[in-house]
Length: 243
Image 1 (cartoon, rainbow, N blue to C red):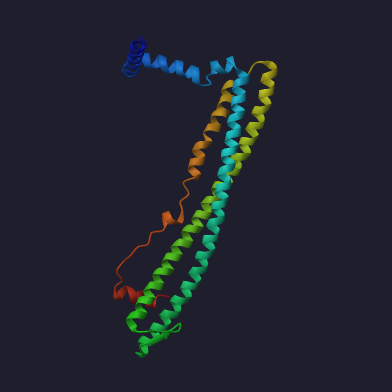
Image 2: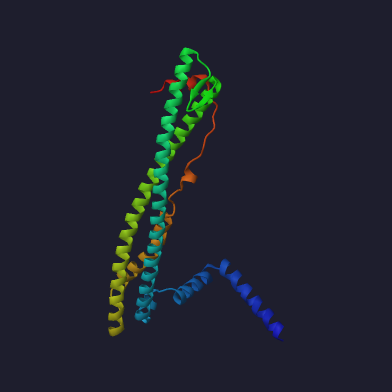
């Protein structure tokens, strides 16, 4: 008997689900009932103003926590990014000096045809010195790209942090205002300016979209892609004679 009842109930549920998707009037009625039962509609707010205000204060608390956590993460990212930028800038200076040194040595040996040529304590044949110069040029280009990207990321993080600070200030102000209204509602058993109040609470939920945007700051690894290319004699001559 119990199994039979279970089968009947299951069939009724399946039929209800199917009917929900094929019948627009039935779907509308169900959606309205669900909204009335699960969301703070103006009607539900009027029925339980204190409950709604308590919910609103809770939403403000969650928003402050989310913003604060994101700010900590961005601050750490900015600190790490700054260290990477300083290192990249230092490495770039070193790479540029070595490139200039090796390029000058190549020009000198090439003009006098004195091979091998000693550079930085190592003897180089012409072909090997040429490869070393090209390698250094690639390193310089890569580090220049990296420092530019790191500086851009640092600027973006700074902008996000400024926006987060403003959001935090606004949300804390909203939370204080909601807490005060909660006490008023508890005393008066009524609530005023529902539309405006609901708009403020809905705005708290909108912070989630803002937090998603701040997570789109790219990492250096995502931006930097080493590109391999064949270098012709003409390319090498341009590099060698570049100012």
